[in-house]
Length: 110
Image (cartoon, rainbow, N blue to C red; front, side, top):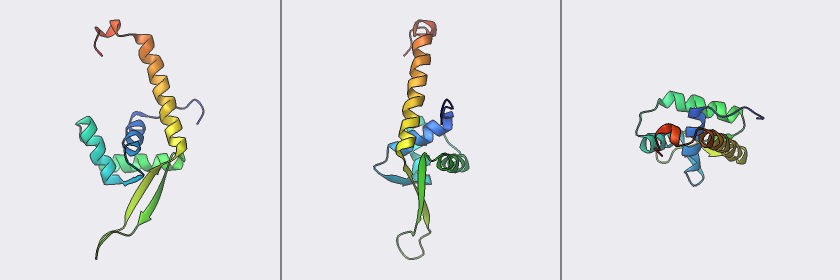
């Protein structure tokens, strides 16, 4: 990806996905984001972001049959090593910016 950084929602979705041991379906990712942030997120927005991240080859997906009779098929997403690398690059960039700003400018709040 070079010098292109992840957008905020891309970072949040990747971080939520990284919190799962293996893969997760879209609704599990939405619930993880809402739980961690305390904010409602658009389910459609998360799915669009997952599709974009898949196009960037940062996540992969697989459709699986649901469990039980009449269960719907679900798409499960897996964070790829390239996705972890991009998260690390984004964190490093944000850390550099926070260091540059310094806490004194923010009134000492952490």
